[in-house]
Length: 273
Ligand SMILES: O=C(O)CCC(=O)C(=O)O
Image 1: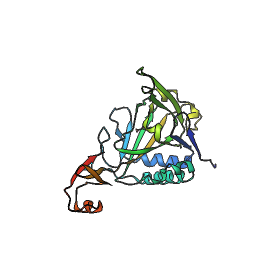
Image 2: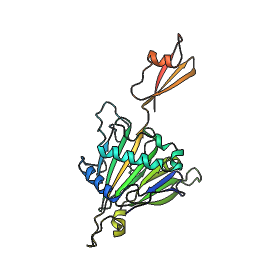
Image 3: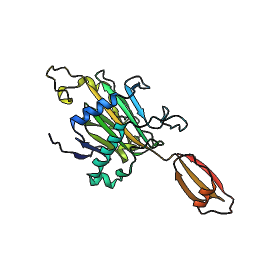
Protein backbone atom coordinates (compact mmCIF):
# COMPACT_ATOMS: atom_id res chain seq x y z
CA UNK A 1 0.00 0.00 0.00
CA UNK A 2 1.38 3.44 -0.91
CA UNK A 3 1.01 6.09 1.73
CA UNK A 4 1.39 9.81 1.30
CA UNK A 5 3.74 11.72 3.52
CA UNK A 6 2.09 15.01 4.58
CA UNK A 7 3.61 17.88 6.54
CA UNK A 8 1.24 19.96 8.70
CA UNK A 9 2.17 23.03 10.63
CA UNK A 10 0.09 22.87 13.81
CA UNK A 11 -1.38 26.35 13.92
CA UNK A 12 -2.44 26.21 17.59
CA UNK A 13 1.15 25.53 18.69
CA UNK A 14 3.36 27.75 16.52
CA UNK A 15 6.57 26.15 15.36
CA UNK A 16 5.25 22.60 15.71
CA UNK A 17 5.33 20.48 12.55
CA UNK A 18 3.77 17.05 12.15
CA UNK A 19 4.74 14.84 9.23
CA UNK A 20 2.65 11.71 8.89
CA UNK A 21 3.49 8.36 7.30
CA UNK A 22 7.21 8.82 7.17
CA UNK A 23 7.72 5.07 6.86
CA UNK A 24 5.80 1.86 6.18
CA UNK A 25 4.34 -0.50 8.78
CA UNK A 26 6.85 -3.14 7.69
CA UNK A 27 9.77 -0.83 8.41
CA UNK A 28 8.13 0.29 11.64
CA UNK A 29 7.90 -3.31 12.88
CA UNK A 30 11.51 -3.93 11.88
CA UNK A 31 12.63 -0.83 13.77
CA UNK A 32 10.73 -1.88 16.90
CA UNK A 33 12.40 -5.32 16.72
CA UNK A 34 15.84 -3.66 16.32
CA UNK A 35 15.19 -1.29 19.23
CA UNK A 36 14.12 -4.21 21.41
CA UNK A 37 17.58 -5.75 20.84
CA UNK A 38 19.06 -2.76 22.70
CA UNK A 39 19.35 -2.45 26.48
CA UNK A 40 16.21 -1.15 28.17
CA UNK A 41 16.59 0.59 31.52
CA UNK A 42 13.98 1.81 33.98
CA UNK A 43 13.50 5.57 33.80
CA UNK A 44 14.55 7.88 36.62
CA UNK A 45 10.89 8.32 37.61
CA UNK A 46 10.44 4.52 37.44
CA UNK A 47 7.42 5.03 35.19
CA UNK A 48 8.64 3.48 31.97
CA UNK A 49 11.49 1.75 30.17
CA UNK A 50 13.99 3.90 28.31
CA UNK A 51 17.14 3.69 26.22
CA UNK A 52 19.66 6.52 25.95
CA UNK A 53 22.17 6.73 23.16
CA UNK A 54 24.92 9.26 22.54
CA UNK A 55 27.02 11.28 25.00
CA UNK A 56 26.30 10.67 28.68
CA UNK A 57 24.20 13.26 30.50
CA UNK A 58 23.00 13.64 34.05
CA UNK A 59 19.39 14.03 35.23
CA UNK A 60 19.49 17.70 34.30
CA UNK A 61 20.74 16.88 30.80
CA UNK A 62 24.20 18.25 31.51
CA UNK A 63 26.62 16.34 29.31
CA UNK A 64 29.63 14.80 31.01
CA UNK A 65 32.26 14.36 28.31
CA UNK A 66 34.48 12.41 30.67
CA UNK A 67 31.88 9.64 30.91
CA UNK A 68 31.60 6.97 28.27
CA UNK A 69 28.98 7.66 25.61
CA UNK A 70 26.70 4.99 24.16
CA UNK A 71 27.35 4.62 20.43
CA UNK A 72 24.33 5.21 18.20
CA UNK A 73 22.78 1.93 17.05
CA UNK A 74 22.47 1.21 13.30
CA UNK A 75 18.72 1.93 13.54
CA UNK A 76 19.54 5.48 14.75
CA UNK A 77 21.54 6.09 11.59
CA UNK A 78 18.72 4.64 9.48
CA UNK A 79 16.14 6.90 11.13
CA UNK A 80 18.40 9.96 10.97
CA UNK A 81 18.63 9.41 7.21
CA UNK A 82 14.84 9.04 6.94
CA UNK A 83 14.42 12.32 8.87
CA UNK A 84 16.88 14.04 6.52
CA UNK A 85 15.09 12.74 3.42
CA UNK A 86 11.73 13.74 4.88
CA UNK A 87 12.90 17.29 5.62
CA UNK A 88 14.29 17.59 2.09
CA UNK A 89 10.78 17.06 0.68
CA UNK A 90 9.26 20.12 2.34
CA UNK A 91 10.32 23.69 1.57
CA UNK A 92 8.93 24.94 4.85
CA UNK A 93 11.31 22.64 6.78
CA UNK A 94 14.28 23.44 4.55
CA UNK A 95 13.74 27.14 5.15
CA UNK A 96 14.16 26.49 8.86
CA UNK A 97 17.54 24.93 8.01
CA UNK A 98 16.49 21.69 9.66
CA UNK A 99 18.52 19.82 7.05
CA UNK A 100 21.65 21.19 8.74
CA UNK A 101 21.07 19.25 11.95
CA UNK A 102 23.46 16.42 12.64
CA UNK A 103 21.28 13.58 13.90
CA UNK A 104 23.68 10.71 13.40
CA UNK A 105 26.88 11.71 15.15
CA UNK A 106 28.19 9.84 18.19
CA UNK A 107 29.45 13.10 19.67
CA UNK A 108 26.66 15.48 18.67
CA UNK A 109 23.47 13.45 18.74
CA UNK A 110 21.41 12.37 21.68
CA UNK A 111 18.73 9.74 21.03
CA UNK A 112 16.20 8.97 23.72
CA UNK A 113 13.79 6.03 23.50
CA UNK A 114 10.68 5.97 25.70
CA UNK A 115 8.29 3.06 25.98
CA UNK A 116 4.71 3.79 27.06
CA UNK A 117 2.47 0.85 27.95
CA UNK A 118 -1.14 0.17 28.84
CA UNK A 119 -0.46 0.90 32.50
CA UNK A 120 -1.31 4.51 31.82
CA UNK A 121 2.00 6.08 32.67
CA UNK A 122 2.43 9.49 31.08
CA UNK A 123 5.26 11.97 30.81
CA UNK A 124 5.32 15.08 32.97
CA UNK A 125 5.13 18.39 31.14
CA UNK A 126 8.60 19.76 30.59
CA UNK A 127 10.87 21.82 28.37
CA UNK A 128 13.84 20.10 26.76
CA UNK A 129 17.11 21.58 27.99
CA UNK A 130 17.95 24.85 26.26
CA UNK A 131 21.49 24.75 27.56
CA UNK A 132 22.30 21.32 26.16
CA UNK A 133 20.31 20.96 22.95
CA UNK A 134 19.97 23.00 19.79
CA UNK A 135 16.57 24.44 18.96
CA UNK A 136 14.82 21.78 16.88
CA UNK A 137 13.69 18.57 18.56
CA UNK A 138 12.69 15.61 16.38
CA UNK A 139 10.23 13.02 17.75
CA UNK A 140 8.98 9.80 16.16
CA UNK A 141 6.21 7.47 17.24
CA UNK A 142 6.25 3.72 16.67
CA UNK A 143 3.46 1.29 17.55
CA UNK A 144 0.61 3.37 18.89
CA UNK A 145 -0.22 7.03 18.49
CA UNK A 146 -0.75 9.33 21.46
CA UNK A 147 -2.24 12.68 22.33
CA UNK A 148 0.45 15.10 23.31
CA UNK A 149 -0.24 18.07 25.55
CA UNK A 150 1.35 21.47 24.96
CA UNK A 151 1.04 24.04 27.73
CA UNK A 152 2.03 27.69 27.66
CA UNK A 153 2.21 29.71 30.84
CA UNK A 154 0.26 32.93 30.36
CA UNK A 155 1.98 34.65 33.24
CA UNK A 156 3.46 37.20 30.84
CA UNK A 157 0.01 38.22 29.65
CA UNK A 158 -1.93 38.06 32.90
CA UNK A 159 -0.86 38.74 36.43
CA UNK A 160 -2.85 35.72 37.66
CA UNK A 161 -0.51 32.80 38.31
CA UNK A 162 -1.41 29.35 37.04
CA UNK A 163 -3.18 30.47 33.85
CA UNK A 164 -2.27 28.34 30.92
CA UNK A 165 -3.02 27.94 27.26
CA UNK A 166 -3.36 24.19 26.64
CA UNK A 167 -3.49 22.32 23.34
CA UNK A 168 -3.79 18.63 22.64
CA UNK A 169 -2.21 17.33 19.47
CA UNK A 170 -2.69 13.75 18.29
CA UNK A 171 0.60 12.20 17.18
CA UNK A 172 -0.12 9.16 14.99
CA UNK A 173 2.16 6.13 14.70
CA UNK A 174 4.84 6.37 11.99
CA UNK A 175 4.86 10.14 12.26
CA UNK A 176 7.59 12.66 12.92
CA UNK A 177 6.96 15.80 14.91
CA UNK A 178 9.42 18.66 15.00
CA UNK A 179 9.37 21.31 17.71
CA UNK A 180 10.91 24.63 16.75
CA UNK A 181 10.52 28.25 17.87
CA UNK A 182 7.60 28.89 20.26
CA UNK A 183 6.55 25.22 20.41
CA UNK A 184 10.03 24.43 21.70
CA UNK A 185 10.67 27.41 23.96
CA UNK A 186 7.25 28.68 25.12
CA UNK A 187 5.23 25.48 25.47
CA UNK A 188 5.97 22.62 27.82
CA UNK A 189 5.13 19.23 26.33
CA UNK A 190 4.21 15.87 27.77
CA UNK A 191 1.56 13.15 28.01
CA UNK A 192 -1.16 13.19 30.63
CA UNK A 193 -1.02 10.21 32.94
CA UNK A 194 -3.78 7.73 32.21
CA UNK A 195 -4.10 8.47 28.50
CA UNK A 196 -3.04 4.99 27.45
CA UNK A 197 -5.92 3.45 29.40
CA UNK A 198 -8.41 4.96 27.01
CA UNK A 199 -6.68 3.34 24.06
CA UNK A 200 -8.98 1.98 21.37
CA UNK A 201 -8.42 -0.48 18.59
CA UNK A 202 -8.28 2.25 15.97
CA UNK A 203 -5.29 3.72 17.79
CA UNK A 204 -3.09 0.75 17.05
CA UNK A 205 -1.47 -1.35 14.36
CA UNK A 206 -2.78 -4.48 16.06
CA UNK A 207 -5.17 -6.03 13.57
CA UNK A 208 -6.19 -8.99 15.72
CA UNK A 209 -9.90 -9.54 16.06
CA UNK A 210 -9.68 -10.48 19.71
CA UNK A 211 -10.75 -6.96 20.68
CA UNK A 212 -7.94 -6.87 23.23
CA UNK A 213 -5.45 -4.19 22.45
CA UNK A 214 -2.10 -4.14 24.12
CA UNK A 215 -1.02 -0.52 24.13
CA UNK A 216 2.61 0.07 23.33
CA UNK A 217 4.09 3.28 22.00
CA UNK A 218 7.81 3.53 21.46
CA UNK A 219 8.92 7.10 20.96
CA UNK A 220 12.28 8.23 19.68
CA UNK A 221 13.59 11.70 20.36
CA UNK A 222 16.55 12.96 18.34
CA UNK A 223 18.35 16.09 19.57
CA UNK A 224 21.57 17.73 18.48
CA UNK A 225 23.87 18.76 21.29
CA UNK A 226 25.02 22.36 21.22
CA UNK A 227 28.71 23.09 20.79
CA UNK A 228 30.21 22.47 24.18
CA UNK A 229 31.82 25.73 24.98
CA UNK A 230 32.22 29.18 23.65
CA UNK A 231 35.61 30.86 23.90
CA UNK A 232 35.38 34.60 24.21
CA UNK A 233 38.62 36.50 23.93
CA UNK A 234 38.65 40.04 25.25
CA UNK A 235 41.30 42.65 25.64
CA UNK A 236 41.07 45.81 27.73
CA UNK A 237 37.38 45.15 28.24
CA UNK A 238 36.66 45.12 24.49
CA UNK A 239 35.36 41.91 22.95
CA UNK A 240 37.49 40.96 19.97
CA UNK A 241 36.32 37.56 18.90
CA UNK A 242 34.07 34.69 19.71
CA UNK A 243 35.14 31.23 18.71
CA UNK A 244 32.69 28.38 19.01
CA UNK A 245 34.07 24.91 19.09
CA UNK A 246 33.32 21.37 20.12
CA UNK A 247 35.64 19.84 22.67
CA UNK A 248 37.83 21.30 25.37
CA UNK A 249 38.60 24.95 24.73
CA UNK A 250 41.79 26.68 25.77
CA UNK A 251 43.28 30.06 25.09
CA UNK A 252 45.77 28.36 22.81
CA UNK A 253 48.07 30.27 20.52
CA UNK A 254 46.13 28.93 17.52
CA UNK A 255 42.90 30.41 18.85
CA UNK A 256 44.62 33.75 19.38
CA UNK A 257 46.02 33.51 15.90
CA UNK A 258 42.55 32.77 14.46
CA UNK A 259 41.24 35.83 16.22
CA UNK A 260 43.99 37.90 14.65
CA UNK A 261 45.38 39.05 17.96
CA UNK A 262 49.09 39.51 18.54
CA UNK A 263 51.21 40.94 21.34
CA UNK A 264 48.34 42.22 23.41
CA UNK A 265 47.46 41.56 26.99
CA UNK A 266 44.70 39.07 26.51
CA UNK A 267 42.24 37.62 28.91
CA UNK A 268 40.53 34.45 27.80
CA UNK A 269 37.39 33.15 29.35
CA UNK A 270 35.63 29.88 28.92
CA UNK A 271 31.96 30.60 28.89
CA UNK A 272 29.90 27.53 29.60
CA UNK A 273 26.66 27.46 27.66
O1 LIG B 1 7.41 10.48 23.85
C1 LIG B 1 7.58 11.52 23.26
O2 LIG B 1 7.23 11.69 22.08
C2 LIG B 1 8.22 12.71 23.97
C3 LIG B 1 9.47 12.36 24.68
C4 LIG B 1 10.05 13.54 25.38
O3 LIG B 1 9.50 14.61 25.40
C5 LIG B 1 11.34 13.43 26.07
O4 LIG B 1 11.92 12.33 26.12
O5 LIG B 1 11.82 14.46 26.59
